[in-house]
Length: 500
Image 1 (cartoon, rainbow, N blue to C red):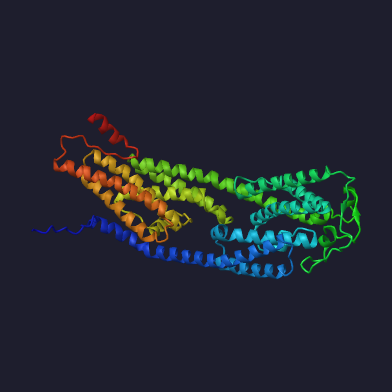
Image 2 (tube, rainbow, N blue to C red):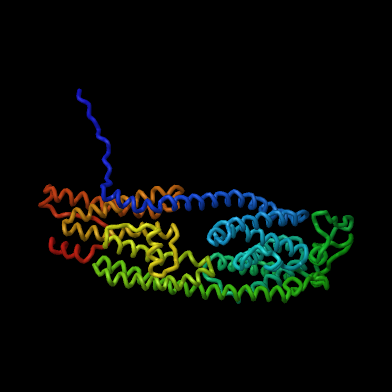
């Protein structure tokens, strides 16, 4: 019986494709090193933040249970750990926002609660010295939500003094937060939480006010209240927000007696200096929001010009595409002056516009010289044209991914002309880009971009197959069917109409 021998696969990569791969090989190793270093930093952060989070959870539970003895030591320990962590990441605002901000906010909430319960006032941002403006405002809003839980517990004990103080504090905080212009995002959602907390506290105050004043709240005359070590007796809250620390036999006859002269005033909790510091934070955040709106507006111009440049390349108007890309680069250069001051503005609109600009540049270079620009070559292009912005790895990979979609349009146009060689060159470019991103996608950080590249690759593979069969004559009498989900160019649409 004759054995069937299965032949080994043959590489799809031609000599042309190998030359393209060598062009990208220039930056592959450097991108791999940068990506590995970033991932190692994230892994280290995760391991350290896990310890910080565990300590914070224990502290928060102790505060909720009223066991505040030794909390200050844990707060200092966590604060030192976070400061070392911030020092290790330097000015990387993206890492701070993605990985560290949550832990900072949580520690700030704990400090705010601890200060409020032990001194009767809120700690200011300058006292905390570890958080930026958004992190501090976020922690204040979360503090208000924790206070509503505290009020519910005090209501069960009939502690009207503490409830009224908390109501006044949250009410005034709400008044100050109304002056802020929170855009849609985490702070806006937390502010909604503050409003719900205020409503909860006011509902509880209303329910308590409906109690019959003639009904007395009796305390067992045979038992004097014991103050444990955990209930710190020093500080305004232990004296002024204490729950029924009356001598044996005392009777509270009505709610009015609870409004004693020892009740903390709002001015004691929220001093004029504290409110003035909140105003300074609001002004800084308003300035940041204006800068953000300006970056978004100018980034739209960069993105629009880059898209028009891509369409010009598809239509063969290369001179017009060059002018639009240069103008887009000039606007991006102007945006960079604002982004260099506020590093968190790099992500989002500006980063997306740079990705679109790089896509147009890659497409223009491909049409001109059948060449895929590496990241370092784009940097050299920027230097020659006086552009100071530099693409990061994510922006370059994103541009490469979108580039494969645009050359897919060119493949459709060339297929309509029965130009198999041009379509095969585009196929090789897709293969090279797919292999390049696959090697960099170790931790799946470029997973979505790689999926888009592979989708474009499969579409071009179908075109190559159909066109190869057609050129061999096996389908000469059959209408060529190219099922692509991308729009046809003007040339391909004209051919389709003629064939119909």
